[in-house]
Length: 199
Length: 370
Image (cartoon, rainbow over all chains, first blue to last red):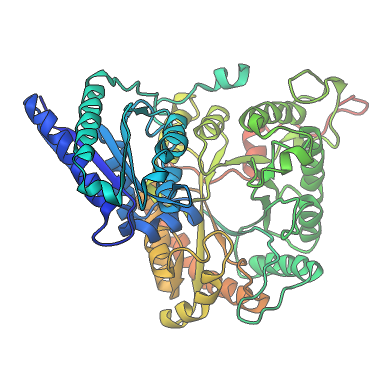
């Protein structure tokens, strides 16, 4: 079997970032599960901080720079996405949202996504359920049932490891099930004009 | 090959002085720019159509009619005419009238506009944008080609025995371009009718427009209008020139940095690397413009944007002087590269010649009801 490509999109702002740390742990867990199935994992790490200017420029001009285009293509072309945001003002961060705002319509449709977030306290843990899950539902992604929230204190708790492993197993399970329906390319395969005229 | 300019008609403060021209000044400046275009030997002047500030050109045929009276050779066009929210009957009437006044120096470019609220302002629904463009244009074609039209559609009140007047000059409707930056349906529409397709590629990277123009060319051939390389393609361009390229960059930078559309975003250097914008010497503009042919194939019309972002009229007229210097070079280079079987853009004269191969009289017999 060919390798599975897993894109890890993290929106942490500090370096080093606990958001990136959580993303790496999730990616590592997915890699381990796949290794148990004798499947290689190719991990594509995308730190949005590196693309913050390009993302803003994309908002303003309507097109991605060449380097951002490569990132967008890598994420939309991955077999699954692990999306990790810090909790800002009771929601995902603006930078995180911007990335998913500039994706083409339908880019994540049918794609397995593992949602995760970090925050200063565990009081924000439901951000996964009221902010991230609806976002990815709107984008028509297939979201793993377990989301992983890590407060600062969780990085010292074994329970986080359990949640990471459970979420990784769920995401890996979705990989097999996800058969992405390819919409026809409107440039290669245009709607014939007679059909446009009569509709 | 045709060269010209197209204007958005924006009223934008000059970022170097903070001064905003009045609407009267901007309208007169647009006219001065058109007259200068003819003076320096350009072929086409095209105006946008907008129905909200900070834009002035809400009434394109009024402006173009005035310019027609003060020019001799210039082709008057639009960039674009809103086929979605204008009544196609009024478009048929206005542009036929303009054709007569301008002795045929008229074509137009259909577009869907870039301001969402224009749809409700004119009683339409933006979700019908593509369908409006398709149905309205189908009616417009009939109004120009059939003396008496019975028609019923989804969007407009029905017509019974309707005759659009005046009839097109010499019985030949104006040539139509379809402008689109992102809709394969519009490329398909242009290809179906064998009309021109104009890709205003100035704000985005070329890869996207290669797909759009590629689609138009393939479908033009599919519908039997000729080979792919005979399809009628127009392209945008955006330039600011000074003899010395560093002077051009230094002078244009504040306009770029504060421009509507891309201002406060990427740097001038990033934007010029990714899009057709060329800020530099006339020679750099020549090289960049010639590269469009390598990217998109032989094409028929090149329109430059030179008068936006608050540039003062004096600077714009100087840009036109530069265009007057480089266009003969571009004409010569493009002509030398273009194979013989690739046609020029249709003009009124060529359309009349094509419509009357055996030179039948154009004027109907006395008493004929048209």
